[in-house]
Amino acid sequence: MGWLDGMSLELTLEGDECLRFVDDPYLKPFNEYGEVGCYKHDGVIRGRVTAKASTKLPVYVNQITIAFEQFSTYNKSIEGHTLAFREWTVADSENLKLDDRGATLPFEIDLSEVYPRDGLRPTYAGTLYYIRHQIFAKAHKPWYSFSGGFVEARAPVHLLRVHSAPARSVAALPGLPPPHILTLDDVAPGATVVFDYGKNCHDLDGAIAGDVVFRGLGDAKVAFAKVELVKVEFAELLSMDTAVWTSVWTTVLHPAKASKGWLKNKVVKSEEEDGDDAVELVEPGGMGGDVFIPPASAGGFSEDRTFSVTCDLAGLDPDGDGRGRSLTPSYRKLALENVPDIATDAAEPRSPSKSAACSPTGGADMDDARTFPDADDDWEFDVGGEGVAETAYFLKLTAITAAGAKCWATKKIYLYKSKANTLQKTIEIDL
Image (cartoon, rainbow, N blue to C red):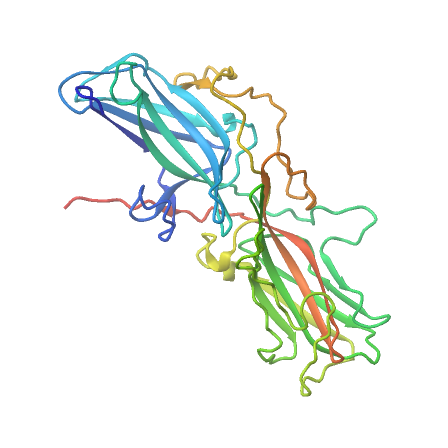
């Protein structure tokens, strides 16, 4: 605000669909209900900007711009990165003379035009890292304004990527076993232990189902066996290298009633450079094939067995909002680095059909070849300048013999969000 040029700026977004995160402190300053508007990650966002003078004295504005930003923040680091950005000039907003009645100007943002092209990801609020999206409007005032150059209004948005899981497994490699088959090769000489779950990609509102087969154990006895769905959240930065493991779901195959000793495992592992607060993932017998001495009453089976396994993913997240038991869609690798200087480069012109809504003021060349890895890339990744983040899921099969040998194996699976599961925005009525 200036001495004599006070003004207000209001940003309103169209659309009634929202998600509600009442415990998210980031959303509280914008909405007391923790609601945030939802949009497709490659769709169009429409809204309006209302600017008006705070008094009857006129206020002059050079132009009003609308910008869209994708940015990252971290739980264990003060760093943050602007991952994608684009700014437009709102049509008919140049050289405005505002009075206390104000002016309301519509705008339209085509998210496919945000730099880098195809670089927008779904909004993600995790344990280690957060990928957020926001729209902000700026009223750029003349150089003689006391207000510091501009007045700003912001609004968070939640981007969704709705995509059904493929009908067949992804990331299959020629010459290797199908990616939806888990095997344990060291339970007993010549034994076959296989978990076939059909495919390695599933909808969050569906289920993972298959059979765990034990064949040819011979004299060896299996005293304990379980299947787990494990969520791994990974963030690697120049100042931080951390991973969090969460056992989202566990089913014990044998024995029918397992004691707490068999299920002794902490579900979080955190590693920091200085070693503080390090928590190791602990299972019976430790990691790898360490020996675990089972109780005398454990017994075991050596005959051929088949166990049917079903993991009801929808039941783990009954509200469908991604918060149930930390269940979210898989989040493919994302490069953590600031986009290049985008303030002065010329932008690609908008199509004539959209030029009436707003026009670009800056941004890097939209034909830039910068892309991000696909979901089926391997873990190995050239981090580049800043870092990388990913959220992945693994199925884990564990078997412990009566002699105390522990065998386990994991394979990566991919979870997709096939339904939006949005809510209706809260409507306030003055009585």
